Length: 304
Figure 1 (spheres, one colour):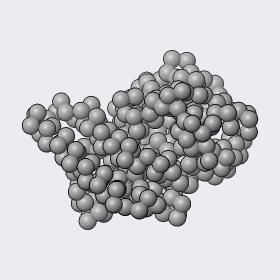
Figure 2 (cartoon, rainbow, N blue to C red):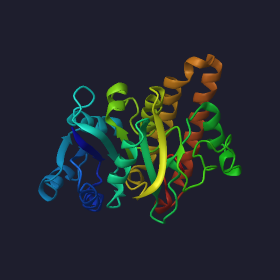
Figure 3 (cartoon, rainbow, N blue to C red):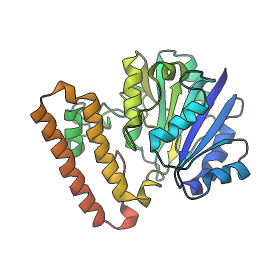
Figure 4 (tube, helix red, strand yellow):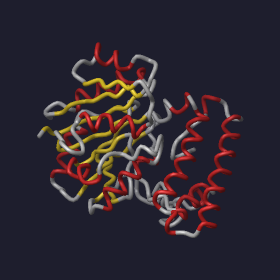
């Protein structure tokens, strides 16, 4: 069985693929690895670019953009998951990332020595060097999401209760067990994927990685944030192209996530309040986006 499958989903992100793939090629030296680049319904010719300029990768082309889960599942299926896996590990990687040369080897060695870890996420640094807050997250329960959306997490960033959404109470350079790391760069144990299956395609964009992490945790594996490796993440490069669509998707996903994981635990009136609050915040974010200069718009779990 080979060491590593790397799945990179691109939707009109061809401009970032050269830097991403050049760093990936150096990082897979010494490993038996295959890189699957999924052109997920894009119109920028990413698949043809990969075939011509990076023929060492396998290009997968979808005529439709079925969402982030859909695109990753195309790559996972090509790698044999979940029925006939051909790799010990899977790395999900965004095209707007740049990986240090020793990242994959170090991460695999760490997981090899700790078989209880099902998911390992590195420290992600934004273009300015600061921490991408989404790279270590708590389970977005109704309470945790409320504290985040209504500003209590920012008021009390060192509180394990109020700041659990992005776990800002944890030291940035300290290894920690978390509820979820981020799909922009996370290493998955192949045997864990066989047990939990593919990503849930009800999540078009956002929260599909949290859902997968929680399912892996429910099967008894650990999810670990490991800052011994830092990966550069040019966050928001694709979402800024369609900010309103991405904002709507972000908050629609919150409703889907609540319906899947929490609605059965609460009475209907409480669930109705949750969905109403999500809709209200979404409308506010859409209005704020329209009043914000295009170069300052950010969509994502940290600042949406």
